[in-house]
Image (tube, rainbow, N blue to C red; front, top):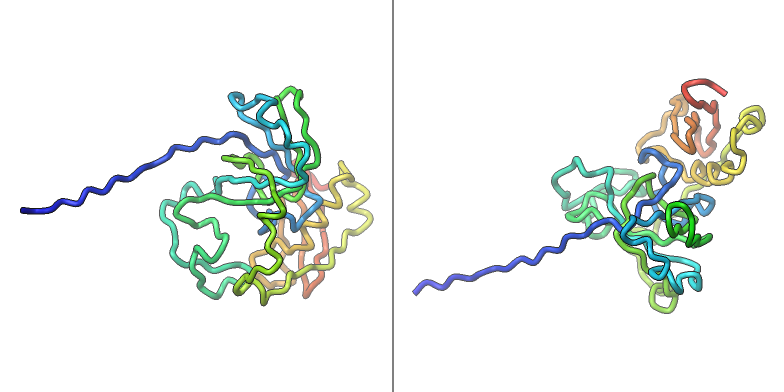
Length: 242
């Protein structure tokens, strides 16, 4: 008698409950972790079927929330990778994907902790949550929102593997006055400086003569990096130099 083992696979369909609006139309320049660029602002806009103010009742008592979201810019990549090369290790060391926060995962889900700046319950777009410190592209789908609870979510004694031996690199940013004074919206300068200090370049790039372009807040910010100094060389908008 032949025994047949039946395997039942349960799948769950998840749909976005919201989308986030940020100043990043593309991946380049987005901080590699949430909270590193505290000046970055994002607006979480709920989908129509979830625009019930009751769903946010009590959230005003929390300072931070967790966002569960999709690496939507990676949809064209069909296969996951068992090992990846973390940027913070110079892009040379291979690490198991489950020991990283790489986007190249079996299920391309991201996790970010952000600070609540405000909750508007009756905007034209329905309830909107304004947050700080998000590491998401503009238009990223949000699948869930959960409150950050410090007694459960904070583990000061935690051991963090290879990450414990890494120092967070911070560049000195030079923003010439003749360029900063011509910014269309000067209120975004602190957030832009936060982003640039984190060094948005790929970790394996080290060409002091190369000019990079960062799309941010409707601008193309041009810069170069030599040693630990980043110099903004131009600010462009609508293909015209400011």
